[in-house]
Length: 219
Ligand code: SAH
Image 1 (tube, rainbow, N blue to C red):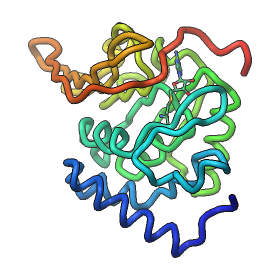
Image 2: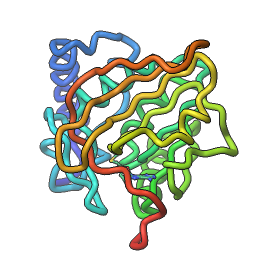
Image 3: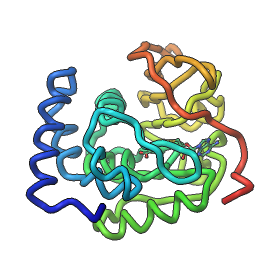
């Protein structure tokens, strides 16, 4: 299927925004950012027709683009601010990074597959998103050169949040990540760094692809 026609896309996005509001994604800035990013450009051509549906969809390298409601929930949970520098672990299609780029100063996004990072970079160029810095690497180690970050978003699930990531979160910062078994239900957790330590809240039950250490051998 070719790219969606502009009018068709507008209708689908408007419908998506209504559905997101209904399930509690009420932050107008987050909704505006979702409105501004054509999700159909981030999925495989044969999934274009389902790109605004309430589902995660397959992308290259056996990975997935998260469902819109999850992107909305995670974005709302880190409450991006115009001056924020945000780290994303798990670039995937680049969709979540693009939504964040509309709301903060700079997004640093890392994935272990070069193929995915390259495809995401060309989407950022097409959409003229110039405040996203990409890297191929092991995001479990964070990105020390650019730390500390105001917010960190992890879009793959591990049994626990890698300790290095907490170390790269500034005081008052927020980290959101799915935590739990690879083959079961995980908890989407929100952690905030307070002066007394780390405070945590569970946001939802979710299913993400696994967080895997190291750079992928098949890039
Ligand atoms: N945020 C993405 C969806 C990510 S899917 C989007 O908006 O489309 C999860 C991604 O995490 C996959 O692309 C996977 O390759 C990546 N990933 C898993 N373990 C990783 C690690 N250790 N470092 C970096 N990326 C990792």
